[in-house]
Length: 263
Image (cartoon, rainbow, N blue to C red; front, side, top):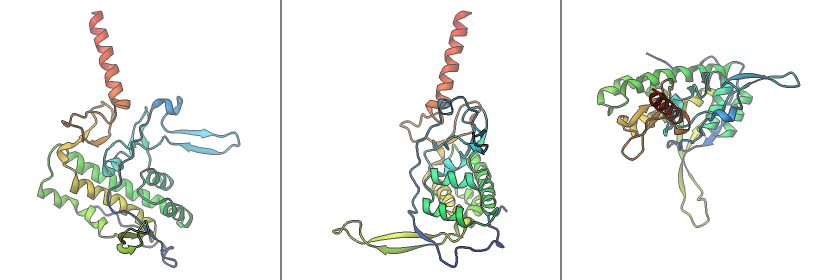
């Protein structure tokens, strides 16, 4: 069975001053951020840039959020937006950046994790995230296009194991306005970098429990690996986005018509 347990030998460096941050436990609304070739000004999708001062930096394009579901957006954290595959969570820093872009973890939490993590700790968590991603990708590809059955629950043991590690509690907080009522808010404890996997597990569980898998689709682009939930009227969506694969398909069809006309 797959396990996404963290390094139990790592020092729990946040225990002395416990880190508690308020979060919403419901799924985040997916960002609609498309990647256009023009954004990169001719770069390949992942390229090493040498700055004038001699420093080296890795240039990643913005992460892609076209899945219409945070869980599917996580699976889309590896893709080929132009002509070279990009894995946005291929190391610890990339993982933190993707979490920030996806708005799954508060910025102050990410800042503290970046500052306080032990050497290599964030890279190990990113490795766990990639393992989780590829395991769940297999589950989605196997079941997409059909409603989930009760039997599918037996395959979700690793995800339930991750969810069991969560540390959330409820707290009554003051109203946002003087005239408002008290609110019951869910709080998550961020004890160490392994906790960064918890909102991802929550997003995957939200996909399983709230999304009709009949409408989970893979983009029809020949080389595209992106997945999405089709929420269009009539469920006619075919592409990850019209700006990417949809436009390429139109251009290919146009060239084919021109070729047929010439003959």
